[in-house]
Image (tube, rainbow, N blue to C red; front, side, top):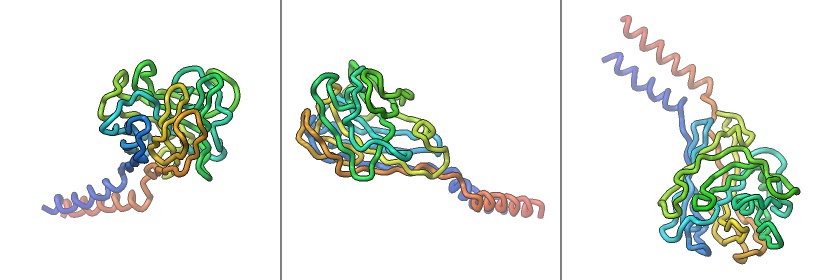
Length: 248
């Protein structure tokens, strides 16, 4: 019985040391593209190293456009999308907010929000992909710096109730188990740069189409910190007490 009694607090300490953080963000309630994103939600969790996301689709509408999540995680960054000119494929056009020719929907970021990275999710054909890029001004096709797939699932399906993706914190310039915070703003936009009024994680304001938009809010997420020395010391102390009781 003594062994069992000291096992309970030991498990409690382990639970504090090995933690998982979670947060959920709601869409802005707008329905310009059917409410797929505006009435949806985004949930993020992490284990200190890998961030996992779930986009839950609004009840109506198909996920047949792109959810573009701008990420501010390191110093510097971009105040707007005016310099993004990558029309290399549908997701790159969505990130840049233009059709590769003359039409553009400029997005100005919220005050103090300066993204350096971007995640674009396009589960429907012909994209069938989700990826992570480093933002870059100027250039043309393929000027955005591709980093990695974000393991979007499912793809080839615009009517699933939810979609998952994941990436490592090191891929957005952060250290694992650091307790660092990143900010994000999500906008729902066609793969030709025609922007809707729907947003998820933050908010935007503008007239739907190839028109200027203003980011009016963003969201933040803090990754799991490294277990503290005090907690680890407490676990060791519990272990020592248990061993002593068992000897007695």
